[in-house]
Image (tube, rainbow, N blue to C red; front, top):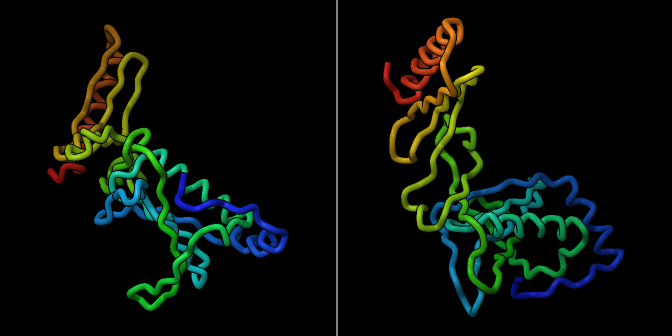
Length: 202
């Protein structure tokens, strides 16, 4: 899977690794560094360990996949279980003067599963996380999703194609009684006002 081998840790490695249980884990979606190939391996991300801040950062390269992220996360478990010395760490110093250890990770073969697309749309339910999309659709971006209202016989969904405005999708499952129609109209009016705000329309 990676261009180095994991060696079973000894009891001292395991004991020393207990400190990592106190480290926080953060995912950083790289916007400039893209997945690249070298010497038969496909590199999709790197792990940075900032001991000063007790933080482990998963740097996910642009065009990395869901599978790549899962593998990166699995390596965190390895680190916590004492495999620290198996990784070819590089000591680095950030532009802010903070020192950290870093390892770039890759695997042989082509990409597996859907690609990760970081979500920066503040009204989307995936904001701050990511979407999963087909590689051929990356340049078009994901479909964002926001709030919705559900009645007995209707559903109102708010969504947004990446480069367009927020829209409302209306689905009615059958005839509505007068009471249901009134509820539908009320929900639609409220949601319409909210979507106008999301689109910056007063």
